[in-house]
Image (cartoon, rainbow, N blue to C red):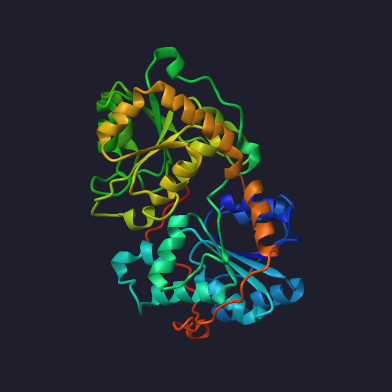
Length: 407
């Protein structure tokens, strides 16, 4: 397998390490999503090389390096990984030819992230997204809802050659559950993790959400990233005013230790909420079909049930399939759930039983079985767009609403 990573992040290390247990693996990366992550992967024994980005190295050099990697490794399978990687899928198809199986991964659809930027039929984003699907032999989607979205958006039938692969983390970060805080005070404790905005009317503005949760009688704990350019002061100030809201620092380096698991498992519930009607940084179109990482943080690391609104179809389908959470239609529904201790206990037990299905090792084994099974012939064009007609510019810095993984 040749793994092609568009923007290398810390989470890719565990993913590639798990795939290397199933395949003879070489990875190449274009840009850095997290500084130093690709170098750490090399230091930990994974084989890889940089191909560069068009902005920094020029498209001629990127194409040459990628061509050299394909020629030297002679892969049977090329796995092209998220995100902003549609052009790399087209470039790999050009360089590798039709004899190589290309697995195109999709977690954040271009057309959903860029809905406000005229990403409808005929737009460049729409063309890139469809062309990458048609250039690949197989696809992995983070949720069934995303696969349905892609089928409807592009008029394609993707079921036969696609696999649902939720976000995942390494088995080594899953630790035994810690004693519940609720066992001390009889209260229901809910966690909020990930990225927070510091401005009202932004999609990840949690001040109003926290007030609602406290008003419902829950004890709220947040573990938000401390990111450059985003102030967490509104949340520190709120914790000083609300007795039942506790502001905590984010847990560092969860990639190789069960530290996050130990902390998150103290809570009873994981809240998956955003301001869905926000005027700025509104990700609701993508949240409606994807599987936010913060949900996985609860289920995998802590083994605690998630709570979300029905808008989050990717989360809802996991809850429906595994019984590992609760779907609400109104905030008042959460108040009733918080007082139903037997229901929370049952869902918690199912979460603990399901944690391994969210590991990279589990998913890597599924990917191996998937690509080794007979695939239907690749359908070129399907009466739509010819992938070879799309101009490949390798634009790694598309103007999309990007958000770091929540940990």
